[in-house]
Image 1 (cartoon, helix red, strand yellow):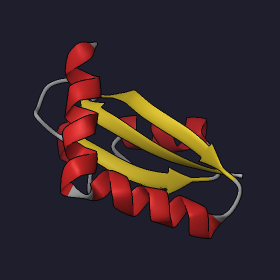
Image 2 (image 1 turned 135 degrees about the vertical axis):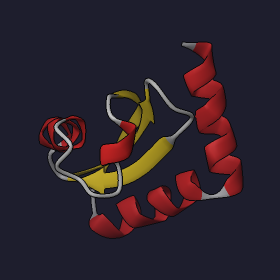
Image 3 (image 1 turned 60 degrees about the horizontal axis):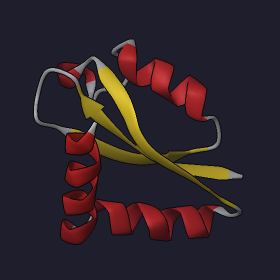
Image 4 (image 1 turned 120 degrees about the horizontal axis):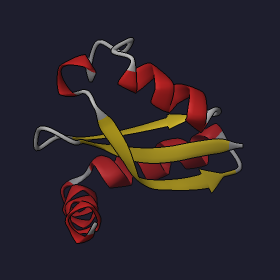
Length: 81
């Protein structure tokens, strides 16, 4: 099982999309500044996640959420909350 997830910075206008097998552990890594790409944007909140069977499926979904239309939908999700 893999998770595709999106997190949003609570202080800056930044959304990160990634994939992992352990979502909780990955979120802790992001929020504890242990990820180079996201440490400048801490703290984060989870705004979206989905579970898929294979890494290939996860990569396809991750690419979608990183695309222009995907990011647009994530902004709408974030802004509703």
